Image (cartoon, rainbow, N blue to C red; front, top):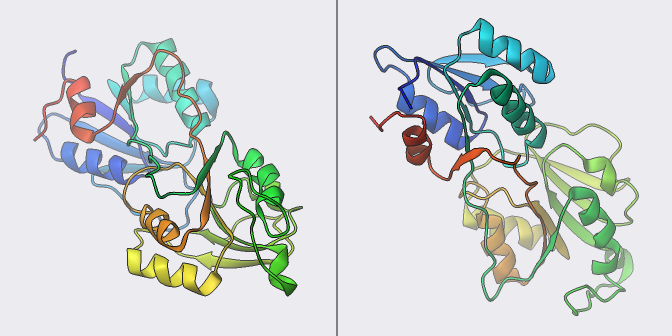
Length: 268
């Protein structure tokens, strides 16, 4: 593949910023990072930045043509299924090369108490059977008394899709970068924070909340992984939402260096 002249980075992640940093400033190469605009104060990457959607597949096709994009690096979040699907369709329609950069997912260790589910709604459906008064799917009964018997849940799946948990009878602590939209669980506390998180901070949070279940997406990476180590130490059950599948036939990479190589760009 010939080295592209203009690279569109679909970003908003640590990997997207790293890719932009590796490409920005190279002679004869223009890098433009596109951010969805879902976060109020995003960390901006090097190089040109655009914020906002494209208007679906047709809008992205128009953008690729109008801006004469030579290659697309999809470094969006592993759960940004819609954007990745649109990128695959638009690049297929225009013949623009696409590489999807996905950090490796998390793998449970021998001392982890994990239950994997396919979607966020599936996580919400599984929760009642994992809270105090019922035997969980891992065969261990949760314990508690009084108001705590209804269960305590630390929810770290982000601000989207939380309506699935609105009908679950439990006390929720919801961690997100920005306030999530309604509906939300009737008993909830918002923890507005942004990673990376340290192991000591996650230990302190779990000691304060004492959750029966931690719910998270399999985001991978190191920025939010300390909560898994803290949960393992505290023997907290973790409900892990699996990643959505990638579109068929897309080229993938697990590191920035590999992605750049697949685009015909050697690391600087």
